[in-house]
Length: 165
Image 1 (cartoon, one colour):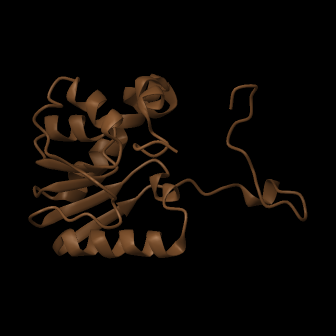
Image 2 (image 1 turned 180 degrees about the vertical axis):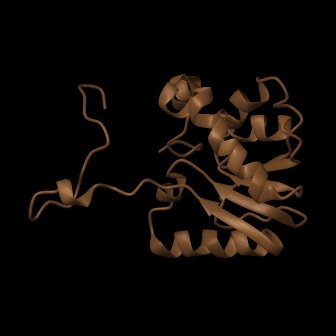
């Protein structure tokens, strides 16, 4: 484990290369939903990463702030057009506090799974609630594993398996 958690410079360098998460046909519908949920208010992204969602959301007129544990990911965000204008607090999404209230706090692409204990996940939900204004939304995007594909007695299903991963 590095200072940046599992999202060190090597991971950050290629994070946006995966069209399965970064292609416009993937990102645009998510951003449409986030714009609707923000209801003209401010948005806070836990684990803002390289700004895959935050930058197009900001381009759509939503005031966006972020929280990110990985300085390498924030460095990639800062290198993108508009990335130097988004406020980003470096820290753990389960515990860090950002000033102000938000209409929307969101956590995308299975990132809740990076909090590996139930206590940490609960703390993240509590932290989101502490940042929300009245009537605000906390959106968590997470895949539901196809448990029916597991053989009896199996407890793990790999997302991908190759010689390098």
